[in-house]
Length: 82
Image (cartoon, rainbow, N blue to C red; front, top):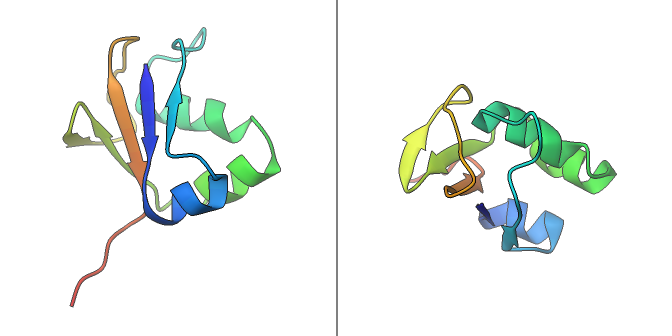
C-alpha cells in the first residue's frame, strides 16, 4: 500500500510518501487513519484534527471506504479557495 501525504500534513510529518503493507485488522480508510495516528504524538497531532480528506486510487472517499494492500491512499487537509 502506498500512503501519500499532502499540504500541511506533509510538512507536519516530514514525509510525503509511505510504502507499507496493510496493517492487520485494517479494512477501511478510517481504520488506516487510526493506525497511523497510533505511531506517535506527531502523527496524532497531524492526523487527529478530524479535518483530513481522503482519496483512494485518486477518487475522493469517506472513512468507511474499504482499502486493500494494492491501493494508493492520499491524505490531505481541507483546501480553501478564493
